Length: 207
Length: 311
Image (cartoon, rainbow over the protein chains, first blue to last red):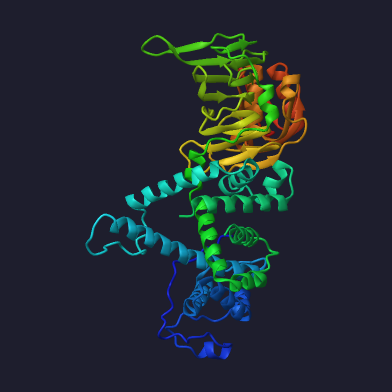
């Protein structure tokens, strides 16, 4: 699933209500809050699903205030994103929430890697730049190559059936249905192979 | 624990489905703090594989093909390339030390040529098609025209075939290439190949029963299923075309006829399905124009095919 956003605009937190309330509250909100008139079905669906989405976010993050932060972020991004027909809105919003947690995890783990690499070089103040700098620097490229090399040896050690399916789907980017068709197996067999592969990789790459 | 990791992986894999039970997923996450950590780790791992895709495609050796193909291609290990049925001279390009660094094979008019490359590949060339081999034993080949490829898979020596502005990487296969005029079709009957634009980062895999078509130079690549009978007809004496861009059809016929045949650019990407018997240039063009409603005109030695002139 891809979700294309305009560059993320943080809502001005002071001016926005803590919880996006009903339509009446939104209409009365101050203008410098990133709350816009509700036009799309997704926004309506978001309102209906807020409680469930928050439950998911709390379950994933284990931190209620971070979860609320992320919930609001979803709202902001919904307003900024280009509208277009979305087939299954509920599924879409759940996956969006799930992916947003992944984005945060990724940023945190990169910062941690960068800080470790830097810290191992010197004793002084930590001068690692923040994640606003998007250009890959030499250090990031090196980390990417090391990451790929570690993945490569773990993938090569996978059992052959799982490895073949994993490579076709995750690396050659063939859709699961196509992998199933090419190998003459069922879609659920494809899913099982990928689960086996991921479990092996996790075991191999655990620190 | 492995079971928790496996459960996390299970949830991750099914999360892309419309049928995902999100409520059940939330309950599982809430049931034990280790579940959340395990899911985070699996999600990050999956994400890092996807982000490393390009590098991994380069680093990972090709998969072995199913056992049958390897058994069938067990030729003796000839030290040099064998040539069967090629009526035209082989051109050697010599390096400084006078040893051949490249060989080019061209199949003559009316003759199908077969090139065997020591222990690596057997290629059947349709008339007028050309294969250059940079080194004895394989490596990178350059190809133009129509050919049927049987590649014996070797992980230590991956095979690359350069066709115009594209590259095809062998992953252990039997496949056919038709090329001409900047267009290209690769149809795989066994195994897999990977196609990419030279210097491009994205590779498209194509497996057995599928074909990729480049319908115009630099155009988006199309994927379709191979129709039974549409491959290898040329080896039995008929040219069978299945939704083939006319540019490729005309390039193909032109090679068979050993006569320049040109096509109005306006119709180069039109698709053609039909059967043409190899014969003289005039006869093949007559068959093509009859089937497509196009118009042909002789121009000295060459033939021009285009839209019918208006009334």
